[in-house]
Length: 472
Image (cartoon, rainbow, N blue to C red; front, side):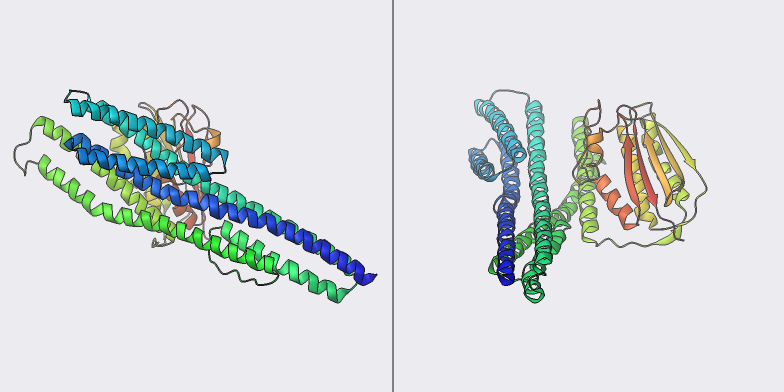
């Protein structure tokens, strides 16, 4: 009877484990077949959209039928890829964004067809207006594509979290059944328990590692067969996630590196033309060259930010820590932005108390201050004020930057420190930006062992606070 009871208990445990493992395997298959494939399709969609825009802009300039055919081909490729993504998506949020992309892309195509018809007919039209509206469509498409990627990655995290919960539940159940089985036979119960709980514990640990961003395919489990198959699925999922993460980092690094040199050449060449080295320049040409120079500077800043963020994420940024005073760095950052503040008639005030020296990298902390104070000036309307406060805080030395801007909604405050994320400000027109500055700030502050957060109320401004630890 004792062995019969143990057999019943062991069979119950096995059935429960198989049920949980089946659920886990289904979730893993969903991650591999749906979410990771959508992430892959996202890159191809981005490439196809970039091809469309290149052909479209060249056709508007040259009115060449071959360029129009190129646009049509890229458009067809984009629509095919978008159809695949819609067919594979299993999340209502992702489907909604993909449907929005489809509608926005249709409007972009229709506007280009309308402009192409005017070009073929040789009619005069407002090219600037068409370019502005098309750029707005393109920017919206890129933002929506980025949102699709973010939602897919969020779905992966959610599913991995559910895997962790299922593994923990199965482990707990196995432990309870094991305790009951000890009454009938300690030796047999230990063997049964170890055959179930040990692999599940290793899978739970691996699930936590994947959730924290460690994608090593090193899970080796061979028995029971179901767990061995699940381990192989885990390893395959880890390999795919690592490939996607590496591809993303390599793309940003390569794009930033390859763009920096030609952008610098464009900037310097434009400046030479503006200085008259290429011959006399008319006022209209000066205006156009000035626009080119400004846009080149904006692109160079974006490339530099991308390179900085890629290096920070990869842990490749060299820090030169020294014992230094924080107030001189704050004063230096304020002096640098005084011209911009005066141009916008914004009053800058500071309240710097007595604080101890801190172990920090001066240049990186200056980068943090420039980002925070620059953002405050950017979003503060003319006639407003920005205040900088430095003083002792619980846990170290704190510095706060407070503006009188429109404020940040509560639901957006946690996300503004993520890369490529910008909050919709209360009652304010969206201001152009990359969404990288605060992500860089967060990385630098965390590498210093500190914390950063924001406090904001609607139409009452925002306060960004950084606390850096003090060595005892």
